[in-house]
Figure 1: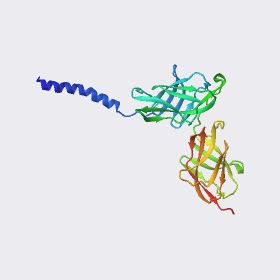
Figure 2: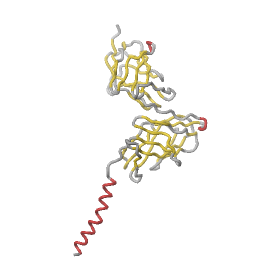
Figure 3: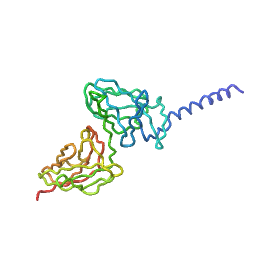
Figure 4: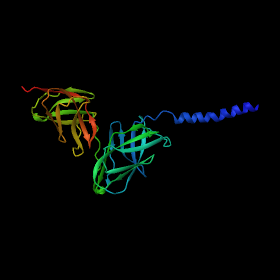
Length: 281
């Protein structure tokens, strides 16, 4: 074979595996349906994130005690485990409640450590998968308890799988009057009088089957906020399991979003709903 043809052939042979390797490294990211947290080193499954909720909970951490080391298993929509190449991807956790110092997080590529601080309290974390600092997947928030005595402590609360909300009129014996149905409402908010009395609302939280959920108001708060761009025509006063809407002196229509908050994080938000502020009769 002529020397020039030999060189060309060698270049072709060397190029083929390099191209294949490049395509593999730049291939599509995995389609993750579920993340399961595993307590290392025994890889005991303790909590699973599925779309917008968690099943299970983390063991409590003890003030100034040992760290908790967690790995993860990622599953696809069929429940099959996805093989994650941690030379390409990175498992990370971050504190969900800004400014919380109950724990520190140390990320180590294929696992992370939760390190308890020097005072008890409840915070929450997000768990995520990154590729080259680009976010591929992230869970909803998961609570973490730091306690004085982990052996006699309750676990962090399970995160309720809230699908819908029914509002209750507390001035009328907690009568239901408006409910969400996915991204819409059945019913409406009663108008308020400018400079008039407040209205007090309670809530029933429903799962995907329409069954009422038991909400731990030691960790969760019923709240409301103004929809983006809506005029702030009233004051919103949250009282744990109920909300007061207090009209101001201005008349008009504004739009509210009702929320179930977990330590400052919106665990559930309703679709927007209008409320009128009318002149007093």
